[in-house]
Length: 291
Image (cartoon, rainbow, N blue to C red; front, side, top):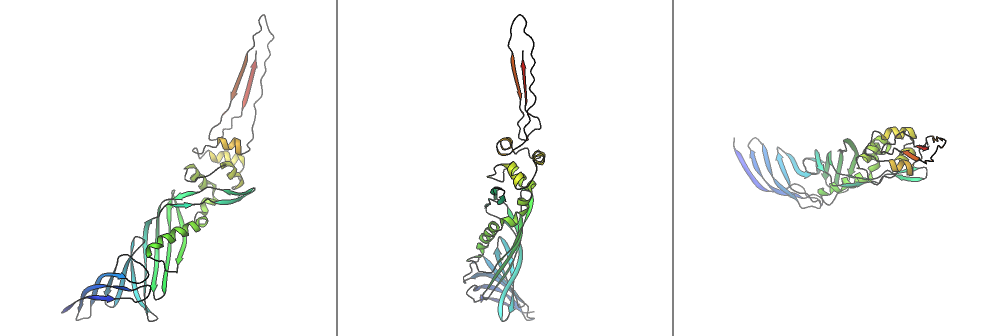
């Protein structure tokens, strides 16, 4: 079977957005089998990094590097216009993102649950369509942070960015804009929120017990029991300064002994006060013994 070697410049697209051109080489045989491949570049307005193209038996495939992953786009003729479409999974390290502060309503105005820095990788998929006057990217995914999986709402981009590298900036801005939706579980569940506070991930938190009372509507006894599970949260100052807890004074004990030959005055003041990160149930006991 005779094979014909092919080598030359090919122009795959010619639109303002995409002008994919490059040098492809390969072969065609007498049976019509075609195989061409090579590097291409985009001369259009959409900046892309390294790319390659494969043409086999009238099928065109363009391979781009998107969000750190290779994305194979298949070409198809749609209403007489050539269109590229493909989907791929990706895993990319996100830049550090400042999330919050989360403001929630309280009885005396908004209360801050604090803020934190998101520092993790994102797992997701991208569905990309390119064509004449078309740029559509649908990005799905989430991330694993502080031992919890967080899902991100679907991000749809239909306006062409200056470069495919700008997609990461779009993701970052989308996470910040949708933080309350993404971290709904954190905001609505005191145990998740306390875990963030306990590990010092959540910053700028004041009056822990007040938040548990006014935001999560917990009773005093409930708060005391719950905080026993979070020994790293030192709340002694909050309990006494910022939150009203019942205070019990023990009885004063006075014992008078009639004086004998010598008057001896002894005053012993023993004050027992237990003030730990977990507020103990031991009351204040004042004992006075006068001899």
